[in-house]
Image (cartoon, rainbow, N blue to C red; front, side, top):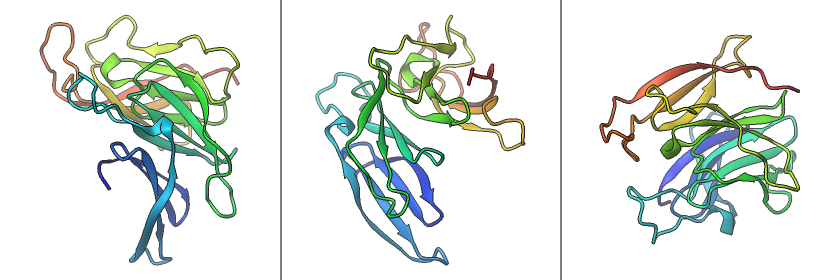
Amino acid sequence: MRALDGSCLIAPTVILLADALADLIWRVDLSDDGHRATAGIWLAHHSMAFNPDSPLKPTVPGINGVRYAAQTHFLYYTSTAQKLFMRVRVDPATHQPAGEPELVAGGTMSDDFCLDEDASVAYLTTHRQNTIDRVSLTPARQPQPRDIVAGDPFTDELIGPTSAAWGRTPDDYGRVAYVTTDGGTAAPPPDGTVRPAKILSVELEPAAC
């Protein structure tokens, strides 16, 4: 393992881990009591690769965030260096990949994200681009128009958004997300001054189903 980044459960005892510098996803199987584990490569694909020659510093990850859509049995992932948002079908019986990864959307340096399966959208944190973008979970034949729901125009509160998760109260799903920011550590804001890292509560307009 080189640089573990995003992770998610796809079954009660199966964890997937993105390795941002090894260009692959690891699978970790836990024992029923959670005291033992075995690990192996779940999937490696060219869409997960990082660019070691990129002039951007710190190093921009390849595969980054991973989230599982349990309703449709797809694993979604971002590939930051390649500006890709991808998905791959998961076999619900074996929890192994069931096909080749396919492009969902692209064009932004997305880091992590949260899924609203009810509305069939994802909310992507773009980190160095200081926005939260909404994209459809269904691949389109034509590039999706960019839908920025926060950070355009630039806002000082949302500098370096890195990850997002829904709140845990019954009405939070699809509406209230908690977003971490790095304050510009990876990409300083226009004035060059890095802010304190934050956890933000972001109330989103519900997406049309």
